[in-house]
Image 1 (cartoon, chains in turn purple, green, red, brown):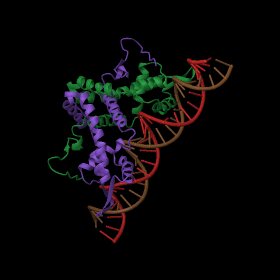
Image 2 (spheres, rainbow over the protein chains, first blue to last red):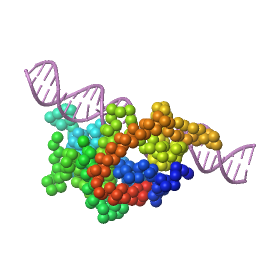
Image 3 (tube, helix red, strand yellow):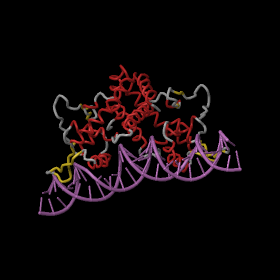
Image 4 (tube, protein in one colour):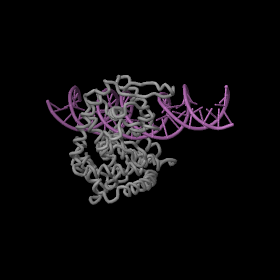
Length: 162
Length: 162
DNA sequence: GCAAGATAGTTTGACATCAAAATATTTGAC
DNA sequence: GTCAAATATTTTGATGTCAAACTATCTTGC
């Protein structure tokens, strides 16, 4: 595929994986953030290919393994996504017997979810893959890891829930 | 909302915007990457609320303003997303008269897209908002910007198209 | 008590994303 | 020339995201 740039001096750069970067985006933090997050997610997903594990389960199972019991709303807050986003994932996890729902006796609207033994096993398997992925990222990031996380956390703190 | 942690010493941390970070994710680059990208995107989207501008248009219009004419496949490569992802966005842009499609006389399967005058105007409007967003990010990131972009580019180079 | 408003969860609709399958067309081998 | 393989694009289906609308239930004020 040939893509011609307007002129030589403002022609887009090309990194080692042959991805063209439009000049208008070269110094834009948001762009690099998005692309990095996407390749990271794709790489994690690729590691789960051919398994019965789904990337979307990981954060939920991990959170539930830390907090024994949570309502969907609490879970939504901890994992940082909208309530409505969780509905279908929780349904899938329940159908597969990875989580249990327990009615709140004091509030008919509400229920809590917790891991089943199957869920704990599934979490362990997912966690092993996730750790492998983390190691890859750690290796790429190297000594800058602490600084990187600090900057990213600063972005979340400054823009989040704003 | 009350979320009880298992114990005090491994209880999740809380940053200034009241987002809980599960301990299992605290030192995980991928997690912070995802959350930072999400808040960045949400902040950009929020800036476009109440306007007729859509965040998804921005990268395409920007790329087209750099490369005068591209086929969907070329565009897909430059913006780093799958071909199929672009179809509906391009359709929307065409319907709104922001881009023009021109048949390739040598290949009936293929066509090229380019900005219309309306498209150029729309791109200018979006770019103004995007620059505002960039400034916000730059301010948050501060002197670490170059280093941050270098790390993110390293992640993309190492994991991308792998 | 009862009506109004708050809250918990789900549903729906708009967007994005990918991968795989389907179409249409071109290229290449013979 | 014809048929097979490659290519360009679209369609379809699975995920995942948000916001807004909807249902059911609970709480509050009176």
